[in-house]
Structure formats: C-alpha cells, structure tokens
Length: 119
Length: 168
Image (cartoon, rainbow over all chains, first blue to last red; front, side, top):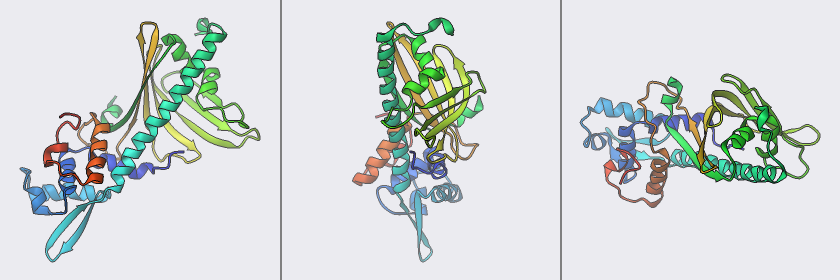
C-alpha cells in the first residue's frame, strides 16, 4: 500500500531539515558546481560545507564527480520526488478516509442518534 | 514531548463534516464505528476488524481481510494523546501488505464550527537522526517547490529555499 521505503525517506527528510543544505540543493538545481563555488555564498569554512555535502551524498540527493583535483557536484532529483510522493500519497489517503467518514456519519445520522451515553 | 520536536515533514488534510464533535470523536475511537468506515468496503471482503485500547500508551489495530481470513491490509500503533472530543494523537505503522520500517505520527484535531466539525489530520515523519535542529514549518510547499525547480530546470535565486519555504 505504501511503496516508498521508509528508511530512504527518513534520510531524505533528515538531509532536507537543514537550511544550508536546502540552499546547496537550490544552487545545484541551477547546474553543477564545485565545492568552492557552493561554499562562496555562505560564511562557512570549506570543511563545514563538505560536511553538509556528505550528508546530502549519503541521502542520495547529490552526486560527486572528480575532474582532476576538482570535485564537481550535481543534484539527484529522485529522492525529492519520492519525498513529495510520500506527502501526496498520505494526503490522498486521508482525503479518501475522511470522505468515507463523512458518508458514515451521514448514514448513522439518518438511522438514529449515536450511542452518546456509552462514553 | 521531545519526540514531536524531531518532526521535519508533514502531510496535512482538512475536511468539514456535518456532525457534532462528540460523534466524530466516537467514530475515530470506538472499534464498532472504526471498522465501518476506516477501510472502504470492497465487494467480496469481510467487514474490517478493529481493536482499540483507548488510553495513552494503549494500542489500536485495524485489519482488512478476505472472507477466508487472508489479511489484505493492517495498520496499527499506540495512542500518544487522548483528549475527547477534540484531539487524538497516535503512532502509525503499516504491518501489511508491506511493513513500514519506522513509525510515523498522526494527529487528529476536531474543531467545532457552528455544530459541524472541521477535521484536521496531520501525518508526520520522524527523521532517522536525532540532534537535528528543529524545523517543523512548511514542508509541503518546500518540497513542491523543489520538485518544480528540478522538473522545470528553473533558475531560482540560491536563497529561494533557505528561509521559510512558504514565504514570498
């Protein structure tokens, strides 16, 4: 019923919980970049940026290629799609559930009063 | 509870129903009601089975099965908060057909609106790691924007997703 693997999604959501990492992803959505290009807009050391990049790589959101000594990074979109799909899936699921609940409440209303005094 | 501070993403669903809160709360918390609406009735399937132990720390489980007893879907969890008739918080994990590897959290809020009830369901995930900064706002719009960004190859400023993702 739920086809998204929870563990992968946990990693994605966890990686996305940090504003610096979201900004890095937003930059990479415009195209590939080197580590120093990514670091430029932030008041952060390269090691600090590298730490964020490792989290993004482990979550599968970023891929690294080496061109000589320069590391270039690019965005991998699939985990974001999966995360958005999880949200859409549950929104749809609960919409359906509430539709069923609304119908049920209408039915019992037309039958008779519910057993309020049993609570 | 600290567990709720780790939340990073949520699916929110709202719906108004023409019934008082007490009825709606009972529909959510009494097994004989739950099994009549929670899983849509499919021809050839037996009536779903619900078990409810309505107290903080008590468990619920709802099972859909075929007439010969085969289970087609099963979901269960533990009640974290029980405030009749306005709020219910419970953990959530599918056990069948595909077990979840971790639990999520569902909050059901019931608001009285002139004798009718507005139901707000918030379904949240916990991240795998702890020690993250708290960040609970606006994940729906952030992710939608991200996907849009990626799909359209649009050029957005670097700051587009660094602040409150739902602003601007």
